[in-house]
Length: 280
Image (tube, rainbow, N blue to C red; front, side):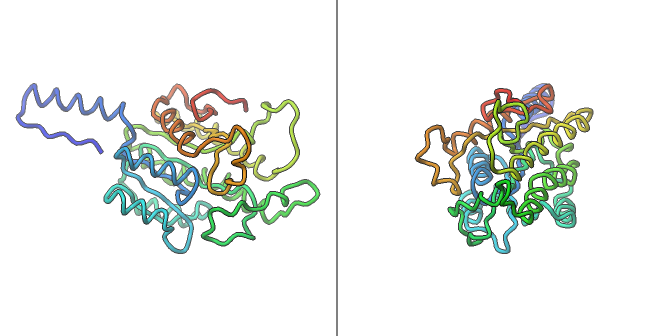
């Protein structure tokens, strides 16, 4: 948060206030809310924003507070606020929005997502890679489709709408959706098979947030879809042998810089982590 103490009234105080206002509009986010923040990209966002001094609201959907978030809150006392939120629940989203009424949210990061089946993973096993085979044509488990559509498409729309008053009340007014190049319709000359549910959900997410951007531009809100690239999260350690995999701190650090630099001119764009334009 940005504070200023005025020692005496008059021209000096007015100048200091003007400088503070300028700093607030150009510096890092004052308050950031991140969904699905207990692991992977979401947790790294929380770590990096908290480390630079921003107030961070982190959400998770587990029954108990995840140890990762408890440790983060202990490391940054007074900076990290932990809340429970199932992003597919209208009631939970509205209840948390009511709880946070009057709290400006400069950057709302829709990070919570599902990409494969974790029915074979323990609830607290963040290193379990999950099962991609049930998204292959001819072997599809449509129960997983229902989950992915609810979390990856309904979730960001519901959260963006529920917390929109908080975003409008902030200085930066930014809504971010963590997307993927897997959602491109035109970026693959020869589309490959597999991961049908996940990939179609990201295509829908991009279109959805493009329309949200058009709907909110008049309020001065900037909406971005970001592709983090092939990020080596806990769930994907088994991919570390492949070239081109990116460290989580690298891709998140770049996304934060891209978010910081974004303006209303950029609203509705699909960008790579470093700010380069991505094909739809």
